Length: 126
Image 1 (cartoon, helix red, strand yellow):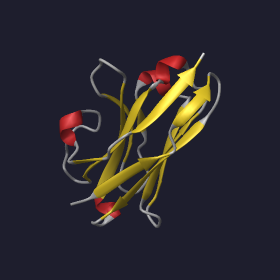
Image 2 (tube, one colour):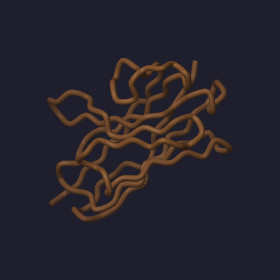
Image 3 (cartoon, helix red, strand yellow):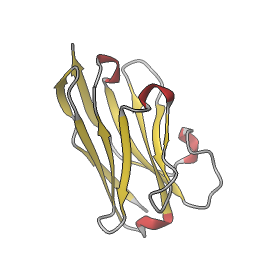
Image 4 (cartoon, one colour):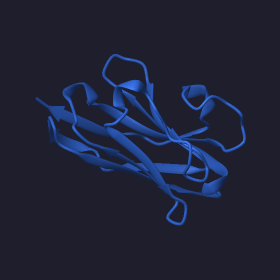
C-alpha cells in the first residue's frame, strides 16, 4: 500500500499562490507516476497535472497550463504542485494520486490511479 498525504491548501486571494505537497510512504516512490486532480462542490473529480516516475513528462489540463507547475523530489518521496495566479474557479479539493510507473494507463483519468490521498482544500476568494 502506498500512502499519500496532501498538504499546503488554504484560503488565498485571487492572484495569489499556493504550493501543494504530497508526501508518499509505504512503497518505493520512484515506482509510481503521480498526478493531481481536483473536485469542486457538486462536480466530478477532474485531472489537473501529472508527472512520470523520474520527474519528466509533465502534463497539464489546458486550463492550468502556464499557471501551475508540477515537480517531484524522489529523495524526499514528495510531489509538488506550484499554483500561481490563482482564480476563484481554481477553488476545489485537490487530490494527489499514484499509479504504477509502467502501467501504460492514461495519465489523466481517475481509474488509472491506484492510491489516493484525502485531499486538501484550496479556496480562492475574489
